[in-house]
Image 1 (tube, helix red, strand yellow):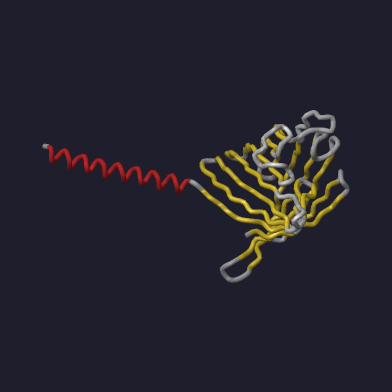
Image 2: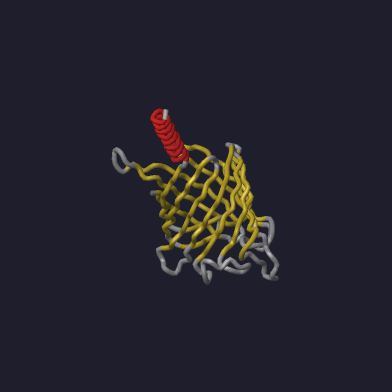
Length: 231
């Protein structure tokens, strides 16, 4: 009986290891990891000039609708401000929500989380209807103040409409801020853009994604043309 019990326990233990191993493999298979980088001729964000030619690496880990993304920007000109962002997001269907921690190298220390420290935190709500995607983005904490010292709650609202033309993927966008803050002195349209992307064939088995975009900021009376490659 004891021998039989040992055999049964061994079989049960082996079966448990197989089940646990299979579960671990399935869990790993459910996790998606992506890594890449853009090289851009200028760093333009929401209609605002943020730097010259830049390298912008990113890595993202996602599972079951949740995602954690690290994104950075390093200008080829050493005078440009470096940036490092962390975004925790969730999406289901067309709905998405996210919180982003922005950090810029002109701040004194990375781990300075004071009200006027190194970080600014933004909450985002979005919905993609297919024909158009809408998003609302508001700084909810961190270093975001008006000239009078009151918290600005700087907000950027955007609509993006993708379409195809001539076999290429285009996207038209318009963005505005509803009140005084980081983007403008009050209610203003700060971004009108038109972008296009395509795959540039390098060899029979390798293509390089490329994109170009024209951006106008009516509030600042400025226009930019950006070209980029994705690796």
